[in-house]
Length: 221
Image 1 (cartoon, rainbow, N blue to C red):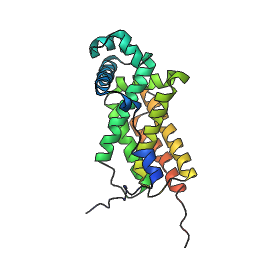
Image 2 (tube, helix red, strand yellow):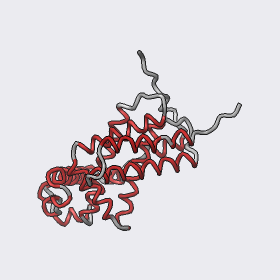
Image 3 (cartoon, rainbow, N blue to C red):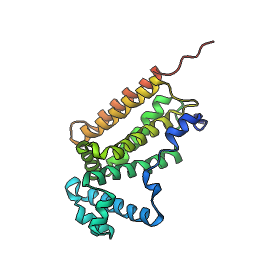
Image 4 (tube, helix red, strand yellow):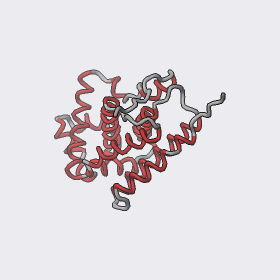
């Protein structure tokens, strides 16, 4: 039995701007600087994967990425900056992967729920890394606002891509996306703290994604 492929790529300019153009500020760096930044982020992810938040020490990151400690601090003023940027990087890769293998369900709410559970399971495979990144988001103050904003924009872009809009989202749809995003992050925190099972997370995500159906524009004859 064939599965109907949703029409996903015919976005209006406003939607393309909110999805396809979500890119980190690092693209403004030179090729050499970008390579150095990537080494730093990879070192951060490796250390966090092994021992979580406490295992990411700036001196260790500098050594593992073969950069001077002073250079590391010029790129990332603190460990929180570094780990939030690491989450931004992880979400960017996740977004690219999801675009290569988009959900196939016809219903937008089901597509979003499936997409977010795929993203959740990707983080689930690296629980120490996920915990480190989420803790950094929790500790982030105003000085980390650009990195936190990018994490939010990437999450929003992932959700909008899965919705498969053919025109700009309405104010109600954007509000629903924000609620879904908050629920997804909250579900990740409760799972990491052992207060929710994967099954409960799935139920919560599927429940909140039903907001998409409630905000769909009404077609008038």
